[in-house]
Figure (cartoon, rainbow, N blue to C red):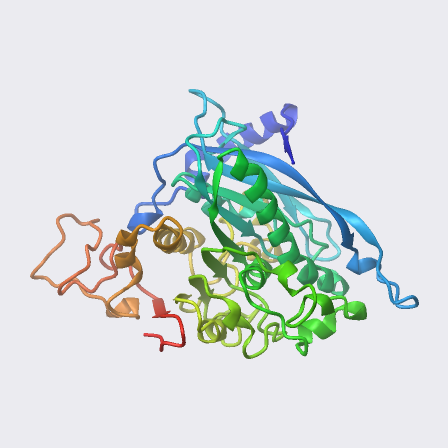
Length: 445
């Protein structure tokens, strides 16, 4: 494992000047939410550091080089970068990072590059030791930078957050999708196990406290790595050239290679896999770690009914939650659209939901992810009151006039006759549903 520093120079200066010209940098930091954010969305007590790790997984099958004539695929070393966010002790006045990434453009356009400011300080010293580890898997053709809204936010709350740069082939080439489905859970397991060994022995993390968080294709990845077994008769298994997925499906000799042992919690946002019936009817029963699913019920990319909603019912051996944004679509997992991505609808639609404001969506997600990981990864039962909402439909929550808030922007304390979801402000818990169910098939509320 290598810690690699980013180069700085004239290009970075141009980026900083451009950001300053457009608007105040603090207003653009995606992990810092506005005044209407729920209580637990606010940043934690720690400054944040970020550094880049380089990992190499040897002798991995190259799916895209499969030769139908010989029935074989070559093996190559697979290089992965991991962006590591963590509680830090930066030097006073240290410069904050400016992230850069690119997404595929609308064909035939080339990839579109963008930058976004963060609150982290690159290569700052670690603060404390033995933090819980959260491994993050991004969406198809995405980049860890685009999930900085949650990676930075969690790092400020005492987590080490490792976001894998999966180096996907472009999403615009449909013929390459098998490689992405093949690699996702293998990448997650490899990175998590590697960091358990390296960061665990150096006391950066507590290797016994690990969670997985994924968006879209990353959601499929964390559900599989978290215990979901791929159905050998699924459309997904048949999609692979030469049945290369065969050893990893349920009952295959390498089934355990795509399963991470000891996972304590799983978060899946707009998870893929339902359209290909990836796990079949019973495959998600292998998940026993607490599970938080987050989705929009108007998801036209991976489908809500056969996706997150069906997964909630199928993962019956896990204590689980399903947070639904009513009328939201698929694109609820990334930062607000950077300036460079607002020029065309294709570019903006990577980031922006047609109905919901991105900053609002992310603030609500950060609130519930904080409560969920606080309860199940840190073991702090006080967070339960934010998850065990008194009414599943947020619109039904009330704050009676007989017990008025102490201030206009006060957060609901919950309890008694106050059924407005705890941590939300009056008139700001709208359009949401939170279902929950215990392990072993208990009915959802």
